[in-house]
Length: 315
Image (cartoon, rainbow, N blue to C red; front, top):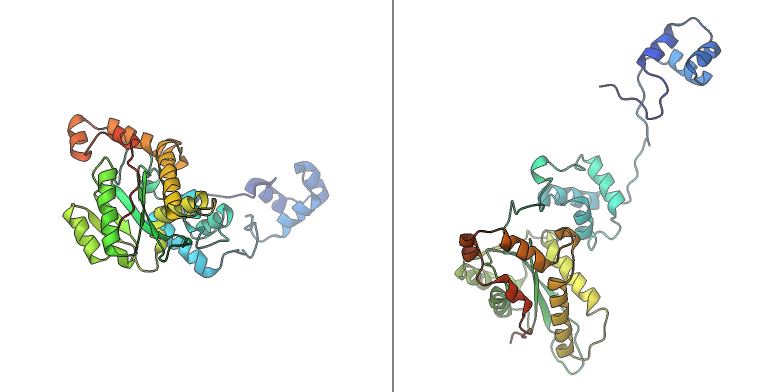
């Protein structure tokens, strides 16, 4: 296949006529409506094909290490461009859609393979609701409180329904209490949980997951972006609560977190869900099932999520 420059005014046939003609270059320029310099170029060039156009040297804002991370995450998780930028932004502050896309083009990853083009669209082809991403975040130490408290967050990979809880310590016992609470919270069965390698998600936590029939997986060491959904959710929670308002104690913070959780699950329309709320996404999934599958995958009616119990601090 012959590729011409976007602004080329000649093709191979005209260039051949120019080379073989005995007329002056001015006469040929008038004949083909060209610049005389163009005629001279094709008379003296060894071949009749366009040279590669564009910059001879490509400069990247991102360094080699950052570009390798983008390539690795793209190959491993198959995220689209927007999700890729969103997930890597905390770790690569200079990343944006433009420089990320240039890196993907350079490594021929700008187009996803066919099996992954429609991932996350339509019906659930890869994961059912019940695949949770868990993570822990530090909370500020308030006056008159001797110990720091922590925020545990769970977000469903498919429906994006979020559950949060404040705990008193970074231990497996608190993580197990959180696990028990989130199992009661979600109307459908939890079948898989993804966490980082924190000590709170150790062997005891894994055994407790197995007791409930849940498969517990951990991210690879030094691969925090694998659990990027939970990381982004925690950052969003902090931006809209802890970093935005002033709290005198954990009780007022907990009340605000409870309001945020309900507003997010029931009212927040998300681009990743085609501008449905997480609750509407869950209802859409519920309504797509027949009666038998509803009974096997849901523990209770999804409408019960509307009446969420107040958050309880794990003790």
